[in-house]
Image (cartoon, rainbow over all chains, first blue to last red; front, side, top):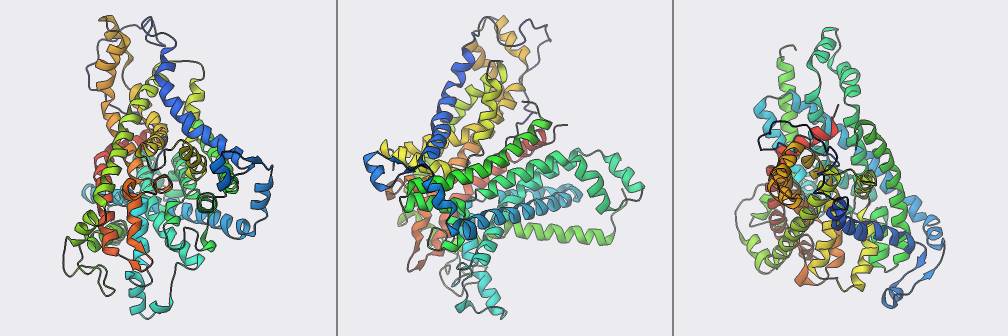
Length: 327
Length: 275
């Protein structure tokens, strides 16, 4: 699910405002609210977050240094092997030739396409009339709402070697021989189809966010630029982009994080669940190594590498966010 | 600005059509295949030639989707209730009180959102196995509560902050205790925010796939996302059934998206474009 860290500010309190009175206790409720109250209130949430997100994160870090297989899963005992798991992962050609390029190149291509398409759609939306804009916004919401599982199955169906509509259409045009073509077995077409899926699911978020930004742009600045003879292209790059820099930063970084850890869309494609090792990415490789092959320690080491990659991106995200927003 | 020329109007029309078709195409394929009597016939066209409800009947009766839908509903609704309650209490704590480590708590809430599920699934699978929680719907609920909490806390925080402090103080002046004030003043005013975050928690739990497929390997405890896989066999795929099942999964999500659409884009404006 797409989750963004953007708090709504315009929640409308329905009640009437009483006459503002001078507050003697600006910080908390006062005598009736003791100091331990905030901790009592957030204790359940902190316990859940700690127990199910932070502790497992620590556990996966420890697992990565252990020899943990099916036997250890049953006996509950495990042995420390130091950096052996990382050595195995880092010297595996599969990492450098398959999993890492599949992850990084895929994310780079998809972020570029998602942000570009989303921005173009936002620029289109802002020029449309009221009615057309409403229709198109609803349409892209439908694309956004499509769950990853069902969306993936639709794209698989369309490109299915036997029944796929796309394949049959291409075959009818004489471009391919449907009987001898399977686009899921090779890496490039496999990830091409995955790209279609991920971009289709991802561009509405960018479009809606950038549109929201475009609506806040001062009209007179753009008009002044137009009067000075700046064309649409120049206006976009010299006025819109600098003014909306924080918006573009947020959508780019969030898309990057999502596209780096894409799992379901790859795993559910034919061959994606481990039978075709050419199409593994870091996420599916880690999962298959651990859960399907019962090599939990090794899988954990791959997961740690992916987490570290994401951590770097998160730090960039936090820096961007903190620059424009106070906590 | 200048009046639109014919050329720019044609351009807008073309762009409109292209985006419309691209956005709706997969949903159209899903729906049209689900009601197509010849869905599994290699020669079918994109438009169904004869309509039928048989695919839906098949997934609900023989496919066991009635059970999976019930499981998913139980999991999603439990997640909504528990995470809504926990998030509301926590968001009041971080937006109404200044205490030590308040910023640390907020930063943690933000950072845990970035953690890849693939990294959590391995230790949580081992933990759930040790605790005997595999194949129990409750095991999934606990995990989904944790996943939906950060976003819910972060969103509700904005709604709680928007309630004027004076209203709270008026309640104290009238002699209300903190719980009374919370119940009669704060809760009714943040209710719209609670609706929005509930929808998101519901969708998180309803759509989740990685944990559902790892924790649930007994057919009686499948959720909808996992249940779809059975129509893919080594002898071929029952596409009519897959698309009918997909339709059953997708429709509730789309309805919810339409409900929150406005609030969603408002929230994005407020969060991303704050000057």
